[in-house]
Amino acid sequence: MMGTVRKKVAKSNDDALAGFVAKKAEIDLMLTRLGALSDDHFGVAPDEVTWGDVGSLEHHADLLKRITDMAFDEGEHAA
Image (tube, rainbow, N blue to C red; front, top):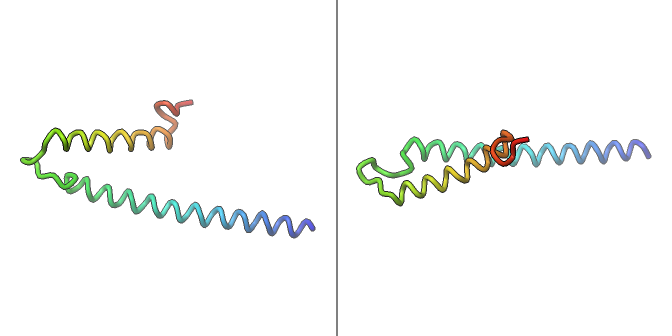
């Protein structure tokens, strides 16, 4: 019976690891795409920047700050 429990725990850990690796791959892809978009100045030519573009970037920055605050225990997530 103890062997069955160990197999279930091992299977559960294997499944968790597979799920973790899959989600990490999703995040890595998103970060790569965001990096490329940033390198392209978010698709806005310098002489065409409007306050709407500033607002869009501000919104993106706010969302990313929520993520980094959570990931690094900063801001409202600080211990």
